Image (tube, rainbow over all chains, first blue to last red; front, side):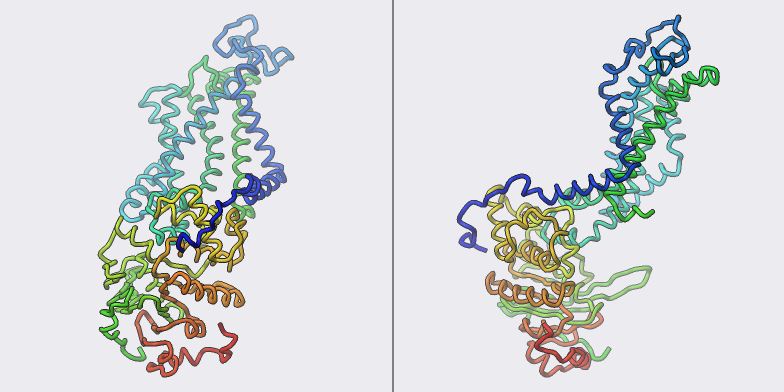
Length: 306
Length: 274
């Protein structure tokens, strides 16, 4: 092909819609499949509700001052009413307000833990899967070591060593969260790197970083997105668990786990105090799990029958 | 074995017209403690502008030879000389730059294109990897490639799964010739395609060779196709070269029992068998 073969005119670039017709069609199909599943839509609705609460929490809360430790002893432990739909706690604070504002804390916890976990795990998994040999052996043995210890127990030890507090709680959970990603991405990489298009890229003279970035990572993305979505729920639950045993957020910071931790001493007479934060955790985790399931169903159709 | 491997004539390797010469190429795969000699002491030589065919049944090591010649897998022993340069001695950046001069088209077009990349992105990849062409010039090159393989420009924005097998193989060929290589290794380029499309691709490959002045290393188990387009033929079985020579002489006067069996096993429909 010499320059004489090249078209003389500049190539015309069609409109955005024309150029991305395939992608648009693909997304329409995804949307259609997703919208057709009740559980996926329920999951999406719960997650969207949670995100709205997390973003606009302080504006939406009926008694914002109650979330920063205001004490109102005349109103302690009121049962649910119109003024306080979820009742009040032992300090007289409105539980609904504290739950709404607590959503932001939970979102941050979930995002950071999942983000750091994937941020460490995905590169390690890709490198282990692509290179094989000694590199893989080292990475996978360390991963196995971490996986063989129950995550929450390990996180508990780390928090105990660092000292209780929400920051340390997030650090500890992030540190135990990555091995799952290494496992997932390594096995996916092992199958993707055998594909002919990877060999074809090598034949073109592509460097290893190019192949990893352009071919391996995009083709491993589906299970990563699904796992990340489900892990959001699990991370929030784990952080709440640490809060519950007193190693996470400290009052008056509104965090669902630590709210239940205080509330359990008021069971069963003042049931609303622990029920509503518990319900918040339950619905959030359920939402992320259903969303993850729904995403897996549309992105990886082979797993749908299971 | 039916007969000992025939060693190549030495003058073929020293011939000045030779673009690729391979001597003593051997690949041993080790799995579960057992050794398997996939390619055993293979020597061959391709003259510039020629088509060398490698024929043999499944598992005879022909595809392994293709991958070894392309340096996609490491040979256990042997020397690969491409345009006077020893390819086996090259590695890293040097090898990476060499690759633009020799390209490969794989057997299965359905898995040789990344499902997550558009045709545009697949065709841009060779230029992005090996050249500094970007922007409008890159677009023109991609359009020109689509012209060469006679596909409409609108295909640029499609994904591989929206194309037929023959169209995908054309895209793979376009990718392979994008950097104007001098040697094209064709590893059973038509065996995954419908019979009608096979003929199209073969005709197209012949036109392309004349137009771009290419040398082909054509690997196939389809003897009719090999007879049709190759100048020289190598017959392989169980990793060894059994016979080699001009297509005429090998097909007309096979010296080896295995070759004779192979030729006799072709159904007698020569005009339809391409």
